[in-house]
Image (cartoon, rainbow, N blue to C red; front, top):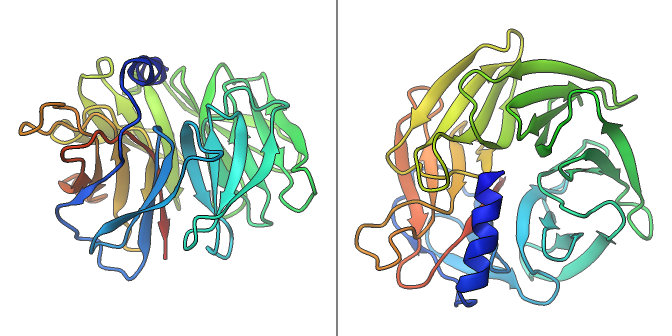
Length: 300
């Protein structure tokens, strides 16, 4: 949870600046787009040939997690500042409130189920939000058990849910009854931030030593719970959001990626990680203006 605390400190001392990312290198061979939440209040978009602000201000105060709708024509954003979940059109940037208040005291990770409902973790519960209801009805799907401070969530192909707990745990949750099963605990995890899954491969962003320390991507075998460090250091300083492109490459949002040519030093960036050998490529980072990426999602 240390990276969240540092974010709050940043927001208290840094004025809201114009958000801009400078595209550096793209190796994601796709016609899709990457959407990024920035905790200064914006959703950004890049397709590998430039970047634009999709939506900013209005309801967006401190957007954190981001997920796609099932048909990829909308994205959903969890906002720590507004204590809400918003729907955003990735083309027009139009914002719509899905649900606000209630149990959304600290809405961190967010994911989409195959039926279109949303899953949100709020450092205490795993919530299910009905996107078809008028006011986005919130319901506790799972709580207590192995949960100490759930911070990340993702959905497997078979509808089972994986929850990342800030206290170094990955828990599988039954989508029908909310029952829990511990997949992996401790190991290489020291300050886990976000989670994604592909088949039996789980990937977790983690920070080895504080907010400005060494970041890494941990691979966890879903069947055995065995952990391995896939990638560490280099561009990874304080990685938070993570997702998988259709090419299989990992896309990581790191608000503390170092830019030695910047007076800010920690400009933030989007890092591509090869899931086979852990090699890293810097996709985009801030130049001149401060950028604070938190969540990342891929639109095919």
